[in-house]
Length: 212
Image (tube, rainbow, N blue to C red):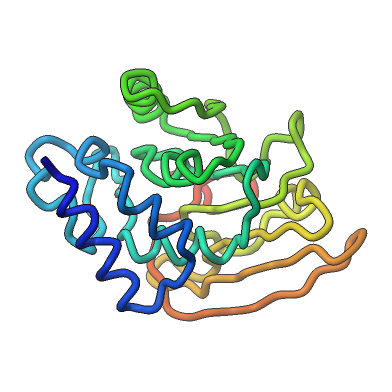
């Protein structure tokens, strides 16, 4: 029913400069409407962020595609996602053949998303906790993607990145962030590419913004 809308969304992202064929294939296959609240399902294939409750959003498809492509992943890569949220980003990574680990600090959101994953057959390792501390048990990761804006780059995430791996994280104030693409080139050695202007919900945690 929504296949045409998914294809049209993937085509529109391609026209906006997304050229990773595996990312575009995933965008064209993952049913975004299943990750959107019922009253907003008619907007699911618009290229826009949408509220999912609890002060959180499902990211704009262009942002999801851009950040995923920036990881430059190979099949079967181990990826850590900070901020499970709706589950859409994790579903895109899973569709691409990645081994996905995802952390969420809002227990109600996590329970809802875990149920959805079970219902539609997505196998993602999930955890309730402070994403700014990462998930050291399964480190190192080939890629780490942070789906909320942080005041700085959390040191635990840098440490849990594998050599050659990339960390993609929005950094800035609560109104606007720069997307940092950090590549680990050796032990405690990194290179950074910066791309303005992005806007995410705040990353809450010990190494992020403090919860009020």
